Image (cartoon, rainbow, N blue to C red):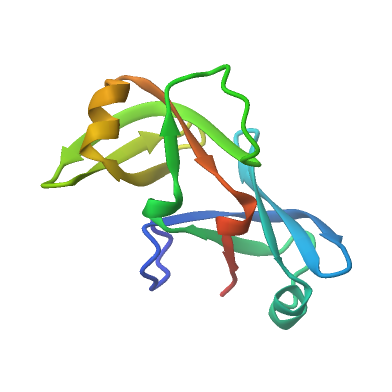
Length: 144
């Protein structure tokens, strides 16, 4: 998860910018993570310009663990642009919330913080297939 960047974001996915689409207010950034996976971010045009983003540039996608929704339903249709299927590596149960670590086919992983009630209801445990849902507006792009 960590790529050596100092940040409070639990999830740090590294890749290369494969596409930039600029609109009137926002820029869509597609970051190729490898292994056929990509993540989409929607950022302001001012942020894209300020970062000097360009296709082919190395970048990080930063995602807070509390911004990730976990499901086990493969046929669930949602408006979340980013949907990552993987297998649960572990579930750490706390007093109120659980930390769910999902290993992705790319070799990277995602950590989600969900309620204990949700983890129990979904039957989450090591080895269970799960899908991490992330809104494009919840992905922060960072560069070195």
